[in-house]
Image (cartoon, rainbow, N blue to C red):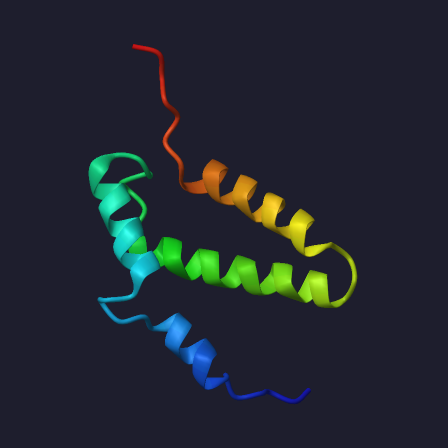
Length: 88
């Protein structure tokens, strides 16, 4: 089995700089309590990256439309990282 070297873009996404907008947003939202604070923002970023890549492969293979993949990704991320808002 051949092992392929990661693409430069993929490497950038795997190791984002501190100024990466999504990572900054995840950090801010975790600090504010909107996202689960016990999950490290860099880990959430990595999970989003990996799951989005898998969804893209499904789209390219014709298993899902872009729209369907987007909805499914949104559901997964809200359920995985979102804080349940309880009635006050």
